[in-house]
Image (cartoon, rainbow, N blue to C red; front, side, top):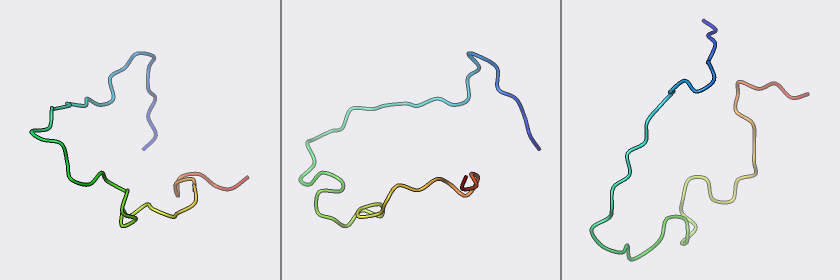
Length: 49
């Protein structure tokens, strides 16, 4: 069902928290992240032009 968003309408909230300690390894630096090495791609909701 389609719907319209209005200017300034809240569509979500993001809560950030401080981490307790510095991580040993940053996400994506060892090459095992799920999106590592993939090309950019539009989601399935967009058809190619």
